[in-house]
Image (cartoon, rainbow, N blue to C red; front, side, top):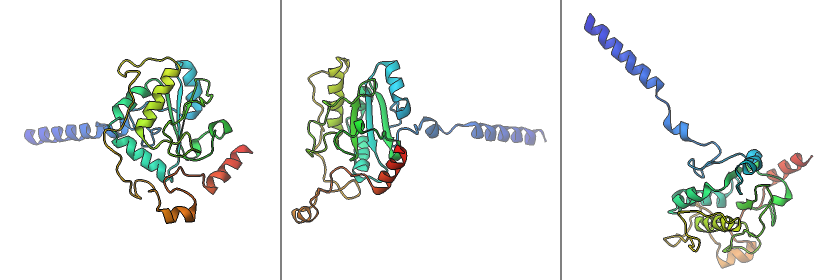
Amino acid sequence: MKLSLATLAVSLLALGAHAATPDIKAMYENPLSHGYGDDIAWVKWEDAIETALELNKPIFLLVHKTWCHACKALKKTMQQSNARRAFKKLSEYFVMVNTEDDEEPFEEEYRPDGKYIPRLLFLDKNGDLLESIKNKKAEYKNYSYYYSSPADILNSMKDVLRYFEIEVPDLKKGDSLKPKKPEKKRSKEDGPEPPKEEEKKKSGKKADEPEPPKKADKKAEKKSEL
């Protein structure tokens, strides 16, 4: 009888311990990351300027949509990039914001050359756009704030830090971050591929260029302006 009671007590303790065990993955998931890295200290756009003023840091603002193929491709590239460690390090010198769908700011200041997505803007601590910080290797002339390469994002982040004369101990000022391997040909699942010459003539648009806003976004924007 004693043995049975002891066994029962051990079983109950084991069940209690199991029930009390927290979901480690859920604990460390950042709902503001939107897949761009739970290890980054993301903040809401609504809190970004206040946080930047308090911490005296520039703002990293990434605008993207869930339905955008180019956004999904960038997200996947960021997750698998060998530059992930450098991105984490540089992020510590910014107030990091990534807005998904209707979270984006609707002020025209944050659409300097259009409403395309994804677009990455760098702002000062007051929330004013740093117009000179663009993608130096932009794939499209009309989309200066469009990035498809983590290396280009990192180089722009370094440009911002140089602009404000902020030194990062682990990164040399003259270093240029480049991908270690040539970019692989993207599939339709990863993101749009450049079309063939015949298709370019028909559509007049490159398939892998940033996404224009959808009609649903335009309606949402009009409602927000009322």
